[in-house]
Amino acid sequence: MIISPKNENLAEFIGLMLGDGNLYSQKSTSNYQIRIAFNSEKEYDYLLFVKNLIKKIFSKIFYIKSVKNKKCFHLCLSDKHLYYH
Image 1 (cartoon, helix red, strand yellow):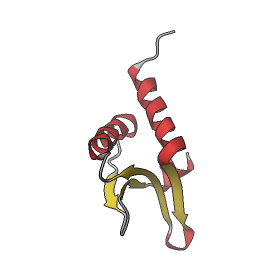
Image 2 (cartoon, rainbow, N blue to C red):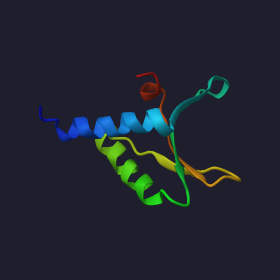
Image 3 (tube, rainbow, N blue to C red):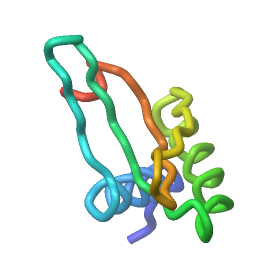
């Protein structure tokens, strides 16, 4: 069975979400986010790869947010529609 590149990209994203991702919501402010955590000391190049991968899959641009007092970056997207689907 041959897997198309689009499916491989989606499989990579699903694996990331299962391993290091989460869905975050703050309903009082209507903030719905999709986030993936990365080690800021070791995974910055991979974070950039994933950011481009996500752009290919969803035509959305995730932003990079550093986590205060931790060696961590989050790749984030605030999108209520994608959050629920």
